Image (spheres, rainbow, N blue to C red):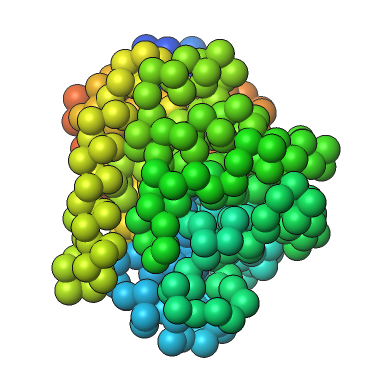
Length: 415
Ligand SMILES: [Zn+2]
C-alpha cells in the first residue's frame, strides 16, 4: 500500500467541506498521516511544521471524496449485451473489474457500495493495495424471489438459477438462509429485490418482489449482524411500500414513488437512491432485447415524473448511479441529474458525500472534510456550485486522494 505523505497543507482553494456550510474562499485543508487534521480559512490555519508540504490549489474546489451508493463493478456498463456477458468466463469478468475500479476512483469516487456482483475479494483487493479503486462495501449477490429481478433465466429455462447477480429465496425461512449465506461470504450490506426490473426477463418493474414479511425477516437478520443495512431494488409503488414497511435502509431507483411512500420514508428516515444516471441512459436498440428496450423507455418516463416529487418533499437522498448498468466512470453526472430533478447544487453535493456516508454507516470516517476523518479529498476545476455538471466530466477532477494518498493528479500538484 502507498503510504500518505506525513503532513500536507492544501491551500488557496474554494473549500466545500460537505457539511452544507457556506463555501470558504481561500480555504485550506491540513492532512496528517492520512487523516484530516483541520479545514477552514487559510488565514486561520494552525501552525505547520517545516516538513509540512504546502500545495497551492490555485482557486479550484476542495471537496470531500464522493460516495456512490449503487455500483456494479462486475458488470460491464453498456459495452456488452447480456448474452455476451453470459458467455465470458468468471475469471475474465473479475479481471475486467480492475480497470473499472480505477476509473471509478479517478472519476472522484473514493467509496462505493457494490449492490451485486462484486464479492469480498474485490473489497480485499483494494484494501490490500493489489488493485487501485474506491473503498468498497459489497452485497455479494442480490437476494430475489423466484422469477424476480435476480432471476435471469428466460421463461423456458427450467434449470436452477446459477446467475451470480441473484440468489433465489421464497418465504421467510429461505430468506433467513439466503441472507445468512451472503453474510457468511463477507457481505457488508444486503441487497434485495422488492420489485421486478427492467433487465430481468420474466417480470415487470411494477411486479412485487419479496413481500413485507420476507423483507422484515431479512432486515432483522442483517440488523443482528452488527447493524448491517438492507438496500432494496424497488421500482413500482407496491414494492417500494413493502420495502419501506419491511425496514430497509434505502429504496434503490424508486421510480414510481408516490406520496404514501414519501410520507412513510420521511417518518422512518429511509433513503432514496434514485440512480438517475441509469434512468437517463437511453437503451441501445442494437444491444437491448426488444422487450427490455420497451420496458426501459417506459420506466425512464415514470422516473422522470415521480422522483422530483420525492426531492421536493425532502426525502433523504443519497447518490447512487447503477454504474455497471450505466457507463463506468460517469458517476458524478448523477449530481447534475439530481439538480435537474430539483435539488440545489449544495444538496446534490451533500447527497454524494455526507448523506451517502450516513447511509453507508461511514459518517464517522468519511463524507465531510472535518478533523479526524479519513483524508478522502477531491480537487475539482472551477466552482461546482456554479456548474455542477462540470464534475460529471472526469477531466475536471484534478486530484483524487483516498486516505491521504493521491491516486490521481493530472497536473502534478502533489508531485
Ligand atoms: Zn443496480
